[in-house]
Image 1 (cartoon, one colour):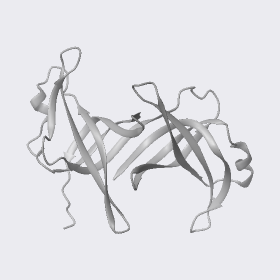
Image 2 (tube, one colour):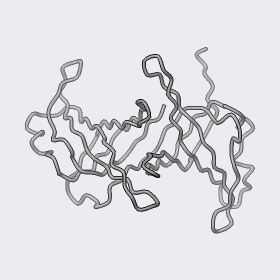
Image 3 (tube, one colour):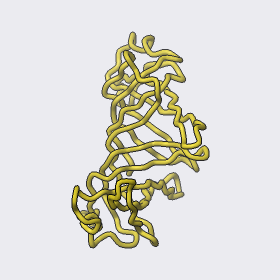
Image 4 (cartoon, one colour):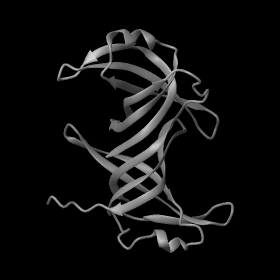
Length: 209
């Protein structure tokens, strides 16, 4: 599971139209393009599929191709083949004073598994403060195939605390985890990357078994 309470800034790629869900409730639907700039100053464009519930028919004409928008809502990130797909159910949409730089930011909710080996690394920032970095993957089933989506994480101890304070006993090979934190979506060598600065992490225990 990879979801986020997110704010997405970009440009409408396909003008809005009104659709209805399985309960015949109308919603506004459009596609927006978000340009991610990587460390090499190149860029990669991704599509975000946006839906806004409880829409009215006359609202569709307000959101046309080429319009800059900022949409806040629930972001669902899913993998299809080798690509990440982004689906945003909007709560609010803004067309006034939209930032010039495209971005996807917010609070990530992640459930998945730690790596099998080299579970984490200890590092030091430019001010000499220790932190750890690690990766984890979320599994989802697409037809008969299971797909893994990897997220890179950073976790910092409280001010003055030792780095050992953020390495729990359960942090072992392939541990099942729940993590929340600050979402970062970027591109590197034309590949979309998901990163997160950890706010909280716990071992996931399935109580329904």
